[in-house]
Image (cartoon, rainbow over all chains, first blue to last red; front, top):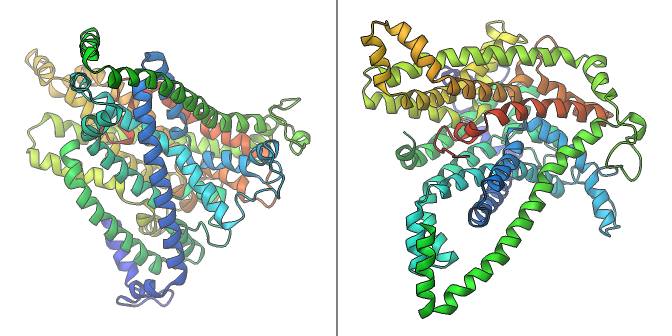
Amino acid sequence: MYPLFYAIGLSLQYYRLGGFAGLHNFAFAFQDALLSDSLRATGVYIVLAMSIECLLGLVLAVAVQRTVKSALGRTLTYLLFIVPMVTPPVAAGVIFRLMYIPEYGIINVLLRDLGYHGRSVLWLSSPGMAMFSVVSVDVWQWMPFVFLVLFAGLAAVPADIIEAGEVDGAGGWARFRFLELPYLRPLLLLVLVFRFTDTLRVFDHVQVLTGGGPGASTEFLSLYLYRIAFKFSNLNYASALALYIVIIVSILFTIASRYLSEELV
Amino acid sequence: MTGDSQAAVHLLSVRVPRTLVRPHRRRSVLRGLVLTALGVLAAVYLFPFFWMISTSLKPTSELYVQPPALWPVRPTFDAYGAALVGAGDWVLLRNSVIVCLTTVVLALALALLIAYPLTRLGVTPRFRRGLLSWLLSLRFLPSMVVVIPIFATIRTVGLYDQLLALILIYTAFSLPFAVWMLKGFLQEVPQEVEEAALVDGAGRWRAFFQILLPMISPGLLAAGVITFALAWSEFLYALILTATPRSQTFSIAVWSFVTQFEIIWNQMAAMGVVSALVPIVLLLFARRYVISALTFGAVREKT
């Protein structure tokens, strides 16, 4: 709790001058054009990363659950997907930095081999592509998380329910929609909450890949906050922004935990 | 079980053959598709690691060959030596090991202190629920929100650029998860086991150390490994609270290669390999608990 009060204290003071500033820092946020750019970038990132991860993860979980039945196959799948998740984000950044180098990066070489002979793609130094690249790393690292959680959820669906459904003639889609989805719903919510809070604070691999650039196209909230606080050392304004985030996240958490706590505790 | 249901399907298929036969053929097509997709995914997931390893083994002369070779002609560990010894990154590696090990010990001890009374002594369910969900909520607090007050506090108490600062913070951050995880393991040991020990004349301490602790040792091991891996991977606080190799951790070593004007790719890759290898190897041992850990025990897997 102490850090929170400390932040409130900081946020109510003027930058450099000190002294009581009232809500000056909080009000300034509304005129801050860089902040709105950063918010937009963060929004795009969250929506892209979350939707791709959840959709892919869900489809894959259902598909694997239905087709890969052998214990060995499942263990291998499990191992395959656990590796990216435990890779430190900084190392993941390094991995993709290596692959996305324009001249020597393996991705552009592969593109050339596949018959693409245009100008080499600047994966990290053109704004649209940088966003794509940064999102791709998030998907690469965390789609497995969605997959594994939902896969574990599917394994918990009682077998006799599925069998009863089959006897009643439920096809693949009906089986998913009416038998499995109800079991997955709390887990889907859980995954969404986890992925949302994690994408909101994404920092490590972005710092390694683009450092927020080019321009400010991948300068997400956490990177922006980092720049204000530690490059411009305006701790006061940064604290005000941080408090906004606390408020928003706690509202969301309160809503989500009403559903979650019954599942967890 | 499955035999019965197949029999049932056959019985029904006499009446409505089309709807039930087609899914079977479609299923084998689907199976092929999924297996192909999994194969592609395996490549997508394993190739990046292969590429990083391959780059890290390239001597500098082979780095800029066009087109880049999949595997170096003369693989060498030169890049590792140059980065660890030449650039002095072994100090940061050592720092990381010290920080992570101390964090593990502190976090586990404190987590036991919280989790034990929570599961063994008479605590009202309301208090228990409240404490546990409060701990859980800490997991969702974006770290950038507390980074500023923590930075300011650490500077005021004079811990800036010291390993102790990172140890304290990592311990605090891994505590909620460690409590949750140990709580789960403690709950699985029946209360009677301990009571039996008490009846046999052991004190609470002895019952705890000689009976309970060995029983939950797999849990301690798993929680310890995961705490280690999380502390190992941490980057933001290491970046903010340290300034010199005296206290920088290995994540910073990896990152600092990126910020140089001219990136030395093979050394950067080498440090990436070391950074990734440690948690991957550790967590393959504790693999059963990774998902539980990442979801605070909400999900238990069977593998």
